[in-house]
Amino acid sequence: MKIKDDNKINDIYAATLKLVKASGLAGITMQAVAKEAGVATGTLYIYFQNKDELIIRLFDVCVKNSASNFFKDYSVRDPFKVGFRTIWSNILQHRLSRFPESIFIEQCFHSPFIDEDTKITLKKMFDPLLELLNRGKREHLIKNIDTFWLLTFMIGGINEVAKRVVYFNKKLSVELMDQNFQMCWDGIKA
Amino acid sequence: MKIKDDNKINDIYAATLKLVKASGLAGITMQAVAKEAGVATGTLYIYFQNKDELIIRLFDVCVKNSASNFFKDYSVRDPFKVGFRTIWSNILQHRLSRFPESIFIEQCFHSPFIDEDTKITLKKMFDPLLELLNRGKREHLIKNIDTFWLLTFMIGGINEVAKRVVYFNKKLSVELMDQNFQMCWDGIKA
DNA sequence: AATATAAATGAATAAATATTCATTAAAGAA
DNA sequence: TTCTTTAATGAATATTTATTCATTTATATT
Image (cartoon, helix red, strand yellow):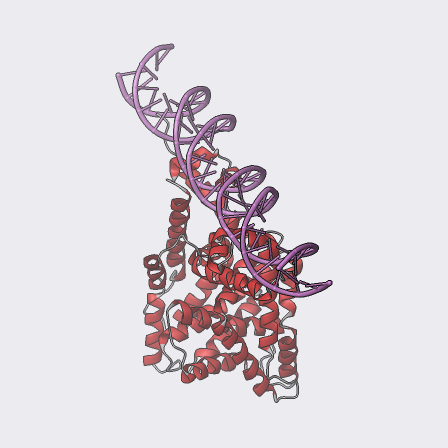
């Protein structure tokens, strides 16, 4: 009996991400995905019910992927600034090394594919970071601003750096990482 | 002789932006745009050669629109911080009041519609701000970091605030505006 | 090696979408 | 008012894209 090849699913995901990065969710066709993944179009329908399911399941994979990377090497017992820097670096590294996934998530956000419930799931991903920021406020280390906006400020900077590194082909040296972190830290610190 | 109605073009643009905000560039069809704009599908082809031209010309309108708003009430003779705050506010206000345009520009960036030259044009839009930041460095008011990354930091924060105001239905009070500006300023100041 | 089972194929079909065009409506000129 | 010109219409057509399915291929089991 021939068995489904789990690797094939990854090939399909990779092909989809590559195409979305190149020409957006709007430009994706099942034929193009199949060709890029090196399979027949019919094969896509063995692994996925239809185009929607492909997009939605890939979205799910990308989100779970992010979640597992963001809090790597982070412990709630770290001193505040250490934990904060760890998470800041993790998110930036993740956005850079998996840029197409980030773009895909962003594009899905404004597409007919993702529903409101899924958006809430995405938001929950940042809960441990919100917790850390709350702690930073309790310890009077950072500004007394609604945690939601502290998070917004932090994430905004990171996202834009990642985008511009990729779009404008910039190299991000250790020094530049430090400078960027410094700006973020000076922005939130009390 | 019947004459073309310039207002009709604006109706078509408005319809397109509304649909892109609702379901992304991927979800747009000419029929949907026509219906939303209250015209027949054939009418779209009187004003635009085809779908591509509609998207590209709308993109152009949005970009020009941004450019004219960003530097409103700004003079190079303003003291640095005054000028900086003016532009910061203008960009945020513009992103908020014309959110669909911002989303449209962002989505176009990752689509088959926009070419590299156009992306460069978009980047040029920020030149006066880059100039101002350079001046801030010369006056030792802000950090001595590559101007490109100072700009990135500033824009990232603004964009994320605008997105989250809209996505999560937040109200941005004057106090919150001030707090957000303070974070940005503390981040870049020397 | 023969058989059975499910994956894989890709041309064929269905469905969605872009575009055209014969016709009608409007508005300025004669 | 009539004529002329162009906008506007929307059903018809062309094109693109999603999906199906009869057939082939691969592999585990006997």
